[in-house]
Image (tube, rainbow, N blue to C red; front, side, top):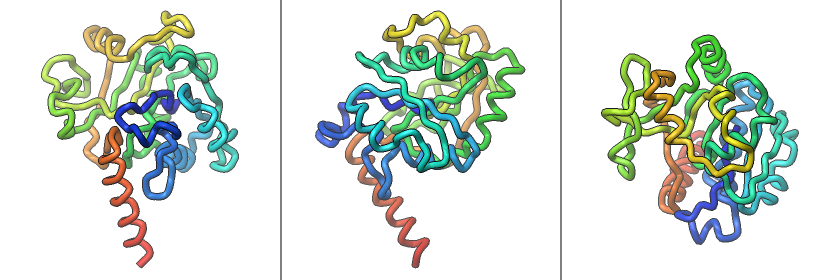
Amino acid sequence: MLLAAGRGERMRPLTDHTPKPLLKAGGKPLIVWHIENMARAGICDLVINHAYLGNQIEAELGGGGQFGIRIHYSAENPVLETAGGIANALPLLGDAPFAVINSDIYCDYDFVQLPELAATLRASGDTAHLVLVNNPVHHPNGDFGLSSGRVVNNAPAFTFSGIGIYQPGLFANIPRGTIAPLAPLLRAQIALGKVSGEHYRGRWLDVGTPQRLEKLDNELRSQHNAAHV
């Protein structure tokens, strides 16, 4: 599942007429980088939730045929926040563990790992697996700690990347259409010792402001130009 329902307030005025996932970096919408990486990893069924200007997202991406995948949409009105959005989309996601990725990040995390992580989660009895990254300058206090492959609430040395694997049962008690944030749900499961995690040291960026989008765009264009010299 790709999360694409946010209003993108920090991105204004860029998001006044364009939904944040369709803002471009390196000549492609942010969400398309993820879709192409998913397709390369052999992940062929995606669910995308949307709310603000969601019709533009559906018009741009269609049914996914151009990427060799299938895209299903979960529309929200109002925006249901992360856990509420996932709960609303559960009928499309099935009974097995699934990955959820924020569409407004850029990363080189290898999505080919996701099916194996989902299989491990299903066998372990854990409810979630989180990918954590080093704390960026704009989020110095972090979100969670990590101890022997387990996510902990104390000593928040790392930031949640926006990449996670979840058991559907984690969201089963959230009525469809309910506004519900993800963090309290995760913290409760972490306190029960039911969340595994990993520290990812590769390329990752929270594309949350026009300045960070411009920086990413310049980097990707430079890489493209260097590769074609």
